[in-house]
Length: 427
Image 1 (cartoon, rainbow, N blue to C red):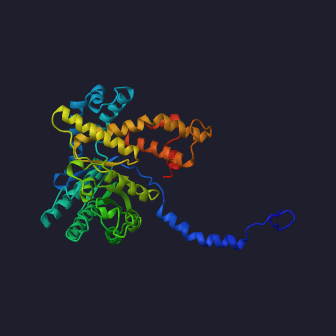
Image 2: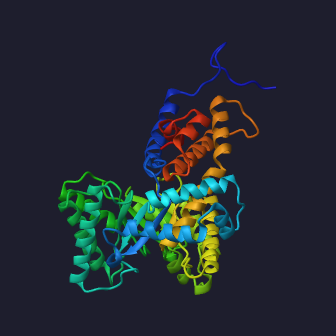
Image 3: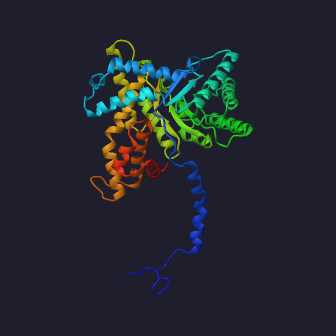
């Protein structure tokens, strides 16, 4: 039998310093690229939804009005936990009673987490002078709300896309809106911009270049302006060369991409799906969002599901049917790790929060127990790894952010405060 060569009587052969140095030289640029491309989860709160309001319908009292309308329909059709249970077809138990109280408090306190003033499909083509004036008005209202503390945590605009036919108009609206915000006192912390109908990475690169130019001219820090990319064309998912495009879009943003938003109706229509079948749970939607999810993993770019256009209005049975559909779609999205979606009407807010709150509260005890066991190294029925601890911490943080969970109950169960959860979650 042969034996391994030895460097000496008592010392086995080892790697040479030259080999180690060669490995470091080979992998140093790879390390840098991986760090740049996959920085991890963003520390800021992710809203549970985005509400789209046409620019000409947006006003100083939009958030308050949406909250009042949502509360009115909630009290009318689900004024008690038992009525909410019947409306949604779920058990009337202690969990639902807790959820019911929290939903009502949320609608009174913070009905909208993220609002997008829409200058695209919801606004349509207008004379240039009219759209300019609307962009100025919207910016002044956003600035005033930020100063007074009456706005939602996140707010911004969706300008027209960068396709040739509307490119100049979209750029002009963005320019007027941002310039007016600066003149009115600066950019609010929760400012978000949305780029719709992206079909080529160069369009993303173009917006990144425009925003970098604006920052330089305005004296803003580099990277202050980020944006969301809407995935609503087939070319955004699969390019003409057969390559998946979403990762290329993220890369083209040069660090400015903060979200990928699925556009239910444009994307479904582009795939030939009939109007009656266009829904966030259609197979073409699942495919697109799965590609988005893999492309965005580790990048800090967050996912948002689309919307349903079945609105809870009319008689009670019609409201309840629309609520059950919306509630089910939100629950389905949450289970698939799409923690954000679009809401198009105030009457959708009760079921948005009912689904989100029940999701987080159902998982509270298990998530806390698993995280506490991981920290104590005590094992248990499930042996969790660091990656799962990150996921559990992220789950608890999302519940805290939206009001589904209370800091005291999470700390009591885990011994962790928010700062410790952030550290575990890698934020």
